[in-house]
Length: 509
Image (cartoon, rainbow, N blue to C red; front, side):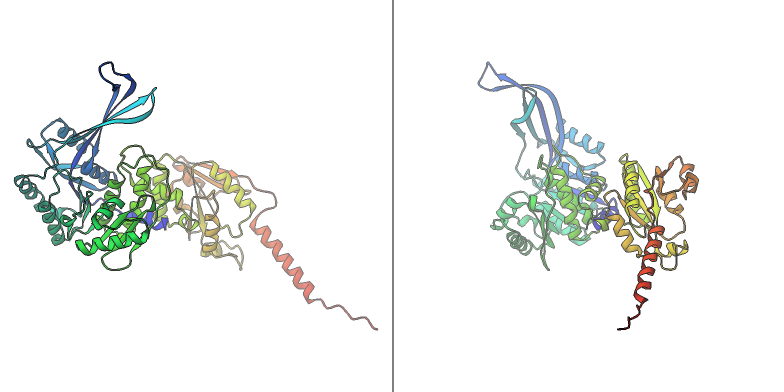
């Protein structure tokens, strides 16, 4: 499965994605909680660090951009310094803020947290101060917002609605956007606010409620997967959705289509450091996936990975495709996932190299995997960070004139045996007589070969050294070679055949 998810990640483009909702600025004031104030029975915080982060819909837009899509944010902010900070930060992160609407009648929503450290360690939140207006936008503001949004809606491949209940996502605005999205064939996905009335989301493509939000909206307490199936079905029926993504934290996501069989898509257990932003990350991944044309099941699986990575980080941090790819490779990879064609392998090698890893390459027939092979592959892996094995195809082995009955095992089995080795990161089957094409495309830092080869006997040495790579012959276990083993087996087989054809004379009695 991880191989197909890696391929799905590679297929993501940079679709234009609109985020509509409540923009929030999260501010953090860090300091040491030194003593009790002499003025009142309160802790005195000596501040030493201020930090601002994007929150709410602004955070979703930032996460969409982090996934490599073209993100635009439509929101209402105040004509104040906090609104300016949101606009400036979005622009610095590559998010289009041209649809932000500053107004003097409402402040920018700000959540300010005071974080105290005891004896310079063990930070804890001491107080949160919110500056916000929760009343819905005036009809005049709603009209202005829609006049700016609706003409541009067809420019986007998906619309994500991030409703934090701060007044932007009114029923009038949402229904206008949802109807326009339906008419333009643009999916509209809603991350709803907690509450019992979801009628404002009627007709959306999908919603992404968590356990609590699902229970409040449906009256069904989600304790089991079957509960989630039932609640998701109710959401689809009452809200006329195409499908619902019920997010179940450590239990993954339940995907319920309007028609068809619901599916539970579990996720890998992770070390949870901070759940803040996980829902935003899931919404961002679902939006980018649907905008790129992926099917809902694949989108949900990718959202599991993205949300899982988010909870492993402290604070709200955008997750990149490269991080998701590395996570899939490190934690979900099976031997089959390691066997790639050259195009996909080149992408994987490029990603590894961008992360500062050195690529080691070797090649051969590996017709009869033995201790000599395992030993030299382990040595090869220790020379770098990523070991790629080029495997001669069946046709290539025959052209090398190894013998009329070679290869002993077909390429699928030989590739599977190599991929099962922990030392091997990737296997690529090639048809040519030499690995030159692979070397030119992958440009490994190191080319190695096990056995009795000298430097200039290693095929491809001139290719690698031409671009500055290294070529290293590795050791061999004495007496171990596929040719010798096959010859010995043939000899033993002939001896057994001779013995079986011998009929002893009977003694006269």
